[in-house]
Amino acid sequence: MMLIGTSFGGCLKSILSGEVSEKDVLLIITRTEAKNLEQLQSIAEVYFTTGNSYTKTPDKYNFEGMGIDLKSVKELVKVLYIKGKIHQPRLFYHETGYMHQELILPGSKVWFEVSPIGINKHPSVIEAYEKYKMLDNLTK
Image 1: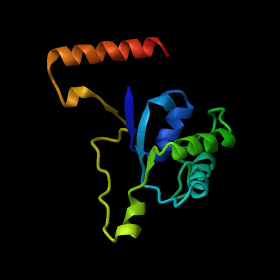
Image 2: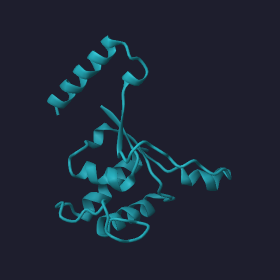
Image 3: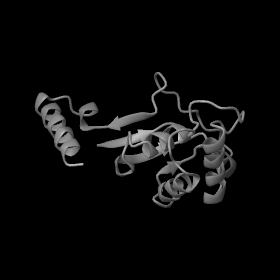
Image 4: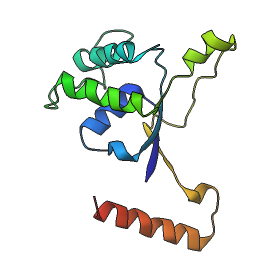
């Protein structure tokens, strides 16, 4: 299964909690604007300690009570960054002069699944994909 994440803090939290496997992450599209790994890790540290990088007030991304240490959070950010799995549209405004469009998605989902079902709705494709997902889950 391949997933696209829509929230830096939400994605980190769901990966570290075991809800989502890091190997299933295709890409995370985030509103962050970190020019390098160190800045991105600093943002993750704010999420870890307070839960919100903008208001610095506790919210849904707070890692408190999860039994996760800051070193694990920063290591995950490093792995995702090095693998090129973190896309930050805000960075491109400064390079191109064109304002990016905010990613507007239905509801407040953190993850969207990439699947062939959206392209090919033939019943045999849907059935094969559902079987693949079941086997994938059974072999984890």
